[in-house]
Amino acid sequence: MPRVLIAAILSIVSILFSNAALSQTEGGSEQLHQFVRSSKTAEGDFVQQQLRAPKANEPQDKGLKVVRQTQGHFVFQRPGHFIWDTQKPFEQKLIADGKQLILWDKDLNQATFRPAGQALASTPAAILFGESSLDQHFDLVDGEERLGMKWVALTPKKDPNAKGKNDLPYTKISIGMANGLPKALELTDGLGSVVLVTLDKIQLNVNLPANRFTFNPPAGAEVLRLN
Image (cartoon, rainbow, N blue to C red; front, side, top):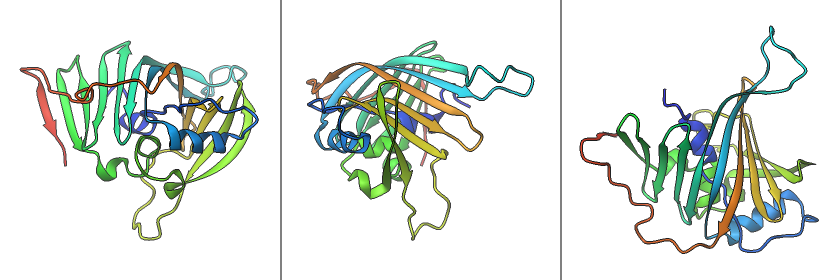
């Protein structure tokens, strides 16, 4: 299993930012809608934590425990281009170039390519970075205000034509908005584990070179291509 959970990154990978800050008097869902409508490009830093509830033999009064933490840099450009560049404690990149999703693991010297398509169609990453309307795949519900952010819950809509269950591995998806920008993302699975991503040093509408999202594996790297 990769050291960064692929499913977590697909849902996290990239929550970025609008041209103009909105007043905090507006609810989280309206801020999120405005962000999706107006954001074009951005980059910044992230900290990603994997949390779990205390076990039976651990103190129960200290809340969720951090079991893994990574940090790095992100870049995005609509539609469907992003880089989630983990820099510490190891180097790993997740890259979407508009057609395929690429996972590069420097330590393993391995690049894994897979089609973006349906693999991302109903994830927050695709909605926030892609061309689709936010309301096409999710119901948005305004939640509480905490940690200086207004939170909004994203509930995947049921597809009446889908034969299987929802592909998302999370029972709860929440985004914390502040001044028109997504500042945090919480993903909760059925076992109570939480992935928390916080975003910082956001630069909006940056000029990106045409080849910013092009990735060519170095000579000698193992290359896996999955359908």
